[in-house]
Figure 1: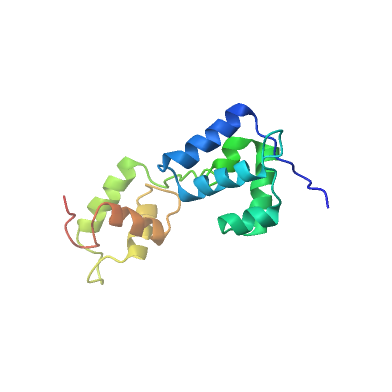
Figure 2 (figure 1 turned 90 degrees about the vertical axis):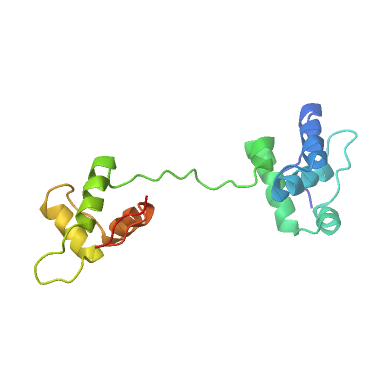
Length: 158
């Protein structure tokens, strides 16, 4: 059966893969992918081995070999060598520094009447009551207090 994604490395790409394999200072997955590409190279002078032979030689599955070949052909050599190709995550903080400071100050203040101490939910509700935010999850309060090394009703660490 003919391969759908045939890897044909240019001289520069082949050299990049060889440098990565020889350096020893890269993520293991990147090195393994470079080895797969070098073995799958079907250009003149390249070994052009089968997926099964590559998988056995390198200790990976044929699915891994096929995926690396597909990524190389569709997205390029750098994408195929990348050790992690997941989405670039962006974390948007619910609170800015000013709001966090108010939350930390509130957590260290006396708890409301009828309560021995602040709970995360009480802090979240009070921040909304004081109109610092429109809505606030107790989990956001937890993460802010954790980053500030605080606990409700106790002083923050340094």
